Length: 151
Image 1 (cartoon, rainbow, N blue to C red):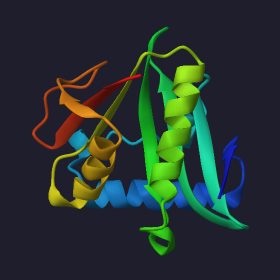
Image 2: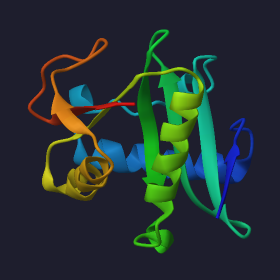
Image 3: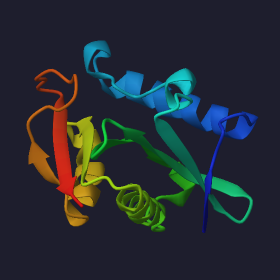
């Protein structure tokens, strides 16, 4: 697997992210959908990575810097054809290492509360994230689970 910083200009990653947004719209009420679109992912405080297995795009994820010491994990996604191959774990380890390398001491995330998001919550728990109260500008929301990991 190869993890690369992606400038989000290619058609393959655009389609991959549109599929991600479509899925989030299908499983989350509009007020509970917090996935960033391409413009949001291109902001200067966001670093976005794509994951390749050979030439196949198999995953993506991003780190949004919130302040000098904390960041937020965004847009984690694994291709349906690559599930259970370790893509998400490899990418999560990479993002955690990059966050630490850049001096961050806390990494937050928001994910869904329903069964669709159970595998994501299990992944994050396995890597040391614990539930927390809403952070940044997230409101209390029964459809959201907020998590944090001290680095």
